[in-house]
Image 1 (tube, helix red, strand yellow):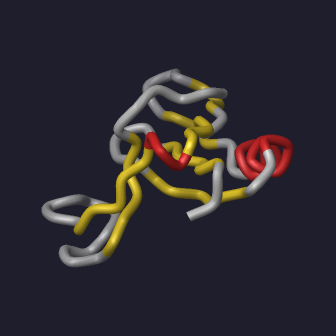
Image 2: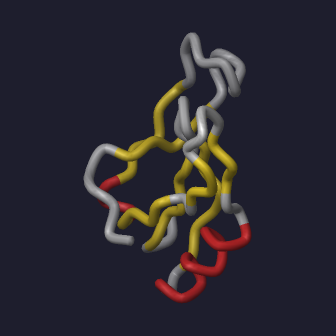
Length: 79
């Protein structure tokens, strides 16, 4: 797992990618801006350190099938 992880999503966590540099992670986040409904508008995914991200097995989620490996944040974003 690289140093910086990019995770967004309005209702569920969506992993967008990873980078060894903060600049690279910011580029990934900008490229994957999301439009949230309910007049929330545009949002940039957050950037987390790899130590603040956990890889788990998906269970009962809408966007990923059960049993798939997904990355979710377990700490606070740095950007």
